[in-house]
Image (tube, rainbow, N blue to C red; front, side, top):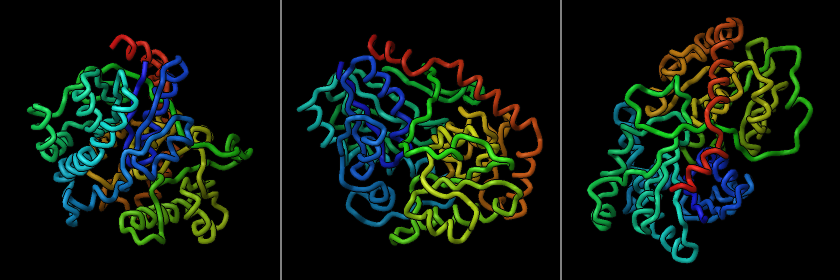
Length: 381
């Protein structure tokens, strides 16, 4: 069987799909993963055949409309889900043609698309093959999809569709305890960490004498390329790391190597750079970060409590559910001053209940069907 996996414009979207794609390849199926051009090396880095579906980076779809006119993201969290759907819709419109060309030369029997990769569903319907929607994380798309549908009206009309295609199978990696009561019916699958690796150093897989805190703002962080949203991510990471270094803890900053030297120079004694989170988080007592969906799931898998500071509206509901479960604390914009961050970190490090709940969540994930089991479900489609 030939399976086309469609990732997105960030490393996280690749890491989310990689476990199932790797399992399918290990079972003898042919697999190709398509992604935005500058993310193709990430696909190759996790050991999968990679194809570029556009040379445009993710920021082009976020900050520009189809005609290239500037677009300003909304600041109101209530407006952000629909806006997110629209820019994912623009990405789908731009990539459907290249994906169609790919399918002409390498015809897939099945198309698997990440949560908001709407082009996957459109391509599958165009080809007449099954479409699988694969959740990237615990973020529900209920309020995001209408924006994507609105943006894709021309493409939907051309394909004779009245709305976004309904998947033949929805795979959800959200632990059952954190799924909303009205969540879309899905086949569960245990999340499995996947990230690009590097040569391990002993500190990465051993614990020190002090509590270890990992700080991250994801993979798209830069302080010198002139891109506003990458600089904002860097400033968020820097400020957060400075807050955490005030604690009596060992601090690890998970960040691209391009910014690590500056962070190490400003904060002597911290470990900063690209680290394999699947290894390092198992030695950590706390994760502090931007509440990115795949990063958050990796910490759940490792049984690590989290301090989550979501910077975007779509991350609010899943972070609140995790906090309500008792495995973390969520501080939303306007709440995360230095005193609140320090207070929250101390609570998460000293109150056993947070670690106990995080470990309970990890056990729940371990009992979900593994990716290898889902390969058989794909074969039946």
